[in-house]
Image (cartoon, rainbow, N blue to C red):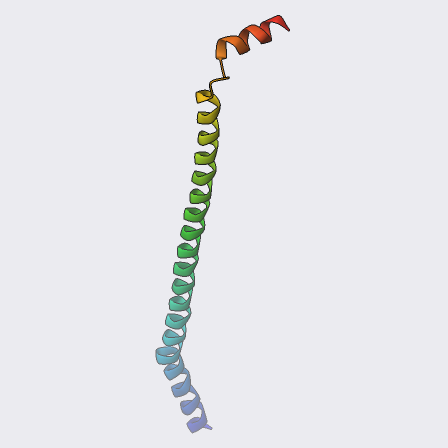
Length: 85
């Protein structure tokens, strides 16, 4: 019975001294990899969103430039028209 207790104690010591740190290190490393992937994907999404917004803003500016540079557009005439209404 004493031998069984010693063997069981030795197995527990080996388990806690060697196996448990390896398992904890593995879990932590896996977590860090997942977080790095998540952060990288989040950055790509933000860059993509910003690029889409930039394209939309450029299109809107182009429309405004066409309106303002159009020969038929006269701000004073529009103001007078609105005042008479």
